[in-house]
Structures are given as structure tokens and as C-alpha cells.
Length: 128
Image 1 (cartoon, rainbow, N blue to C red):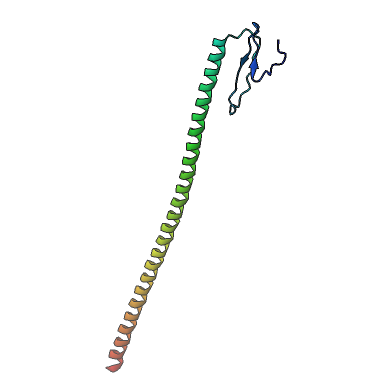
Image 2 (cartoon, helix red, strand yellow):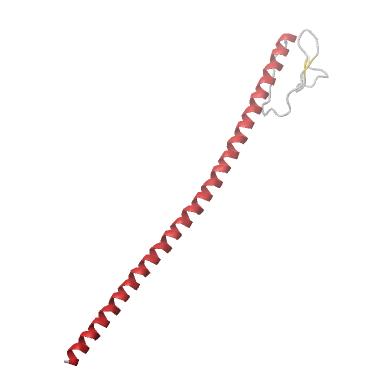
């Protein structure tokens, strides 16, 4: 029954007709046919189903590629966001340091003013 017939690409049904089948090259599945008796209609239905499965497989591959691209974009956005957050945090630290320094300078100015006042009072007391 299978003499001179490649089982991957050809099927020789029991009635002796030779039906050629071309399997899609990108399909990851191995199809094994058991028994004979396939009619041309069954073969056409089979090929139609294979083409439909291949089309769905291609659609799925496109969807997966799109999702992977989107995931990469989101990771890139997250990295950019973390850079911005670090910059904002550093900027806040700088502002806090400036404010602390301004408070210290204000305290220094108040101490200087008190010292000037004390010197003036001393001069008033010593001058009497």
C-alpha cells in the first residue's frame, strides 16, 4: 500500500488513487494518518483545516510579537519613570539641604544680632 510513497507528503488510499499533500513548512505539529480510504473531499477538508490552523498560528505569532514589543516599551517607560523619580528625589534633597542651610544662616544672623545687642548693652553699662 505504501510502496514508493513518502508518508509525509503523499497518501495512497486503498482505492489506489495517489493524492499529494503539501504540509505547511512552519507548522510545529506532526500529522500521522492511520489507515487509508481518504477521499479527495476529506483531503481538501484536511488541507483547508491546515491552512486555517496556519493562519491562526500566524495571527497568534503577530499578537505575541506585539505583546512582546509592548512589554519592552513598558519596561523602557518604567526605567524612564524611575530615572525621573530619582531626579525628583535628588531635587527634593537639594531643596531640603538649601532650606536647612537657610535656617542655619538665619540662626547665625540672630546670634550675630544678639551679640551686637549685648555689646551695645555692655557699652551702655560700662559707659555709665
